[in-house]
Image (cartoon, rainbow, N blue to C red):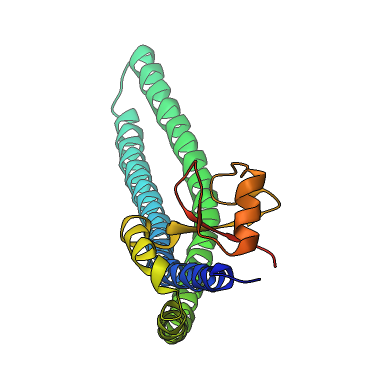
Length: 234
């Protein structure tokens, strides 16, 4: 096909390729941040599990102290039993002793539940620590791969830019000024292909006359989006 169409098609391909490489390079730091955030979250899980274990141990200790205090109280009551002279006082003190022993039984049940909970929480700590280690290993590998990818993107971009410069130099003089003006305003979006009879940028149909002009090699502008058009095929 005569005219600037093949040149515009190649320019558009190269500019889109450069844009895609830029996007891929910009996405790398975002992915790195996501990896770092995952490590921070996993470390928080470790600290939460450890803190929960400490809280349970404190509760168990407090209840054990309470049991000892109640046992001392029972021993005091039992010692007092020998000094009581009336049945009423004796029965009242025995009632206090029974209540204290019931209280100890309840606290012992609470301690048992806390110990079972402690065992379950203790299992979470090594699991959480394992997740942190894996996340850190993944980050190390990701950073190594990222540096390789960024270097490759930079090399591919430099190559594409050099090719683009060569291709742009072959544009006919009569359309260079228009191309440069559109490029300044729209960048890589200054050009669009036509597939069938549709602009691939704004999906507006071109007229039969515009299609014929493209085939003749004339410069055709999309009447809807203002881009410089080329035949996507041919």
